[in-house]
Image 1: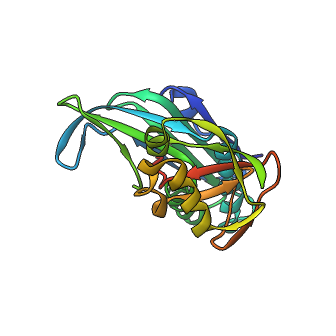
Image 2 (image 1 turned 135 degrees about the vertical axis):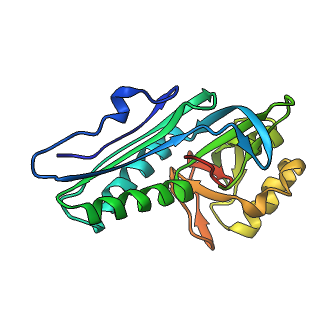
Length: 138
Length: 83
C-alpha cells in the first residue's frame, strides 16, 4: 500500500481517523493531535492553522517516505488540518502500519517529532481574554 | 540583481505587512546579507529574522551561500508550530 498524506481544511473527521488496514500488517500505531483548551497556564478558545501549502505537501510526503527507515514495508497515513479549530477538535492524524508493533510505535513517534520540527505549518492561538499570538516553535 | 518573489508567513507576514512581494536581490548571497536586506525592506522584521530559515523554490536552504535566479520563490520560514 502507498502512503497517504495531505493537508486539508478544517478539523479532521472520522474518515481521516480510521487507519487503512491490510492483512499483512498486524500492527497499526495511531496518534491524534487534539486542540487543547489551555497553554502557558491560560485558557485557549481557538487555534488557527496556516501553511505554506506546496512546500508542506512535499515535506509531509517526504517525512512519510523517510519513516520507512523503521520498516521498508511501513505504510503511513498523515493528515494535518488547517484553518480555525476549537478545543477538542482533531488537528493531526498519524497512522503507522507495519507487520509488527515495534516499528509501528517507533515510526509514529518519529513522524510526530519530524512534523513538529519540519512541516511548514504555523498556529495562532486565541486566549480566553481575546488576545492572540503566533506560536513559534512547539 | 535578480527579481525574486518573497513569501511571508505567520508572524513574519504580520510584521512585513504583506504576504508576498517582489524584491530585487543579488543572484548569490549568504544568509547574513539576506537578513540585512530583508530588515532594510521591513525594519519591524529585524528581531524575528535570526529565528527564520529560508526556502528557495520550496526547499530549505542550508546556512551559507544561496543562489537565486529571476523568478525564484524565496520563503521566510519562521519556527514552525504544526501538530
